[in-house]
Image (tube, rainbow, N blue to C red):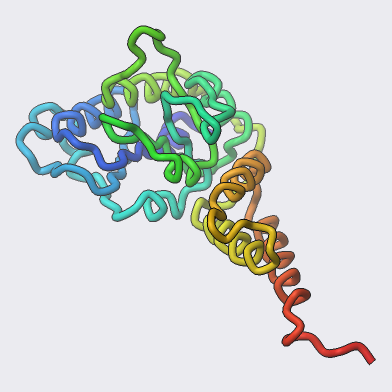
Length: 248
């Protein structure tokens, strides 16, 4: 896999960016390191003069940014989505540092499309948004003051990605399922597991977050998704007596 091909597979996703200048600086950071694809989930205007001023010679990336109404839509065609987070908690586990992430992408990414997802400047990504992503990554910082500017965080990840690119063949060519396929599976599972009484109907997301983490580690492909969805359909059929004939 050549350097240009690997970098071309990576998109930066900004969720509800609040400051046009930050978006401009993100574009500059991306272009410095050879990344070109920017996706925006709602957020501030990018035709603002501040955005264009801070983008400098990366205004083409700013003009080419694609907007989405939700993070789920922004990740629908992505096989490997990586949530960047500073906070660690019950649903924020198994985080990688940028260099570890790059190694994992090279060893097991195949030709998958990758999205590095960054949250809002003031409070990052929500727990539900983290759940939409396959992996999580963080930048180790000082305990005294750990908050990074959005453009700084993007620059550090882009730097590690560009530094970790080594021309050659990716050892693993297995194609993982897209985020859209994974979300369809999770929706199917939640519906079926509610029907059979496995999930608490007052708070199904509590256990579904654990199921999401388990299946994210499994790195499923499209065929495996089909098998699991077939299993869910069979479970629903087996528990619906109105659809089954009585045994003779």
